[in-house]
Image (cartoon, rainbow, N blue to C red; front, side, top):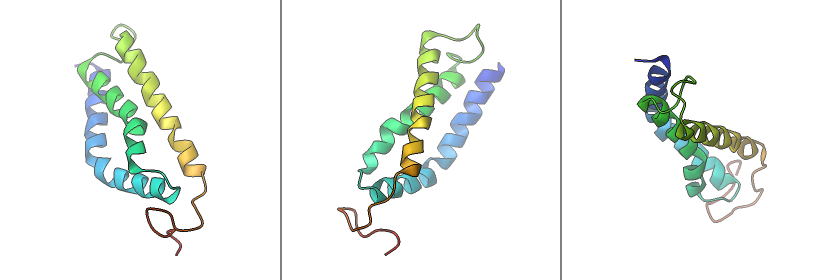
Length: 104
């Protein structure tokens, strides 16, 4: 078993273990800025796909790197970078369709 495959399996285990609490926090943040929680799906799909590609051996060290592995890595990077504006964007000061602001 290669290091990349072990890394992929470990990453997949971490993603599965932390998926529910992380999703709950991210959806609350999305609601805070007035967006639907469904925006989490495209944001997280890259990391999940990258972990699956690593675990299956389609990504990793250069001999095992496939076009799918490159795509999975790029999607994981794009998904990770998509969380930066989410963290920096100010919440809405007034109530929105998801309820009052957290400070109220």
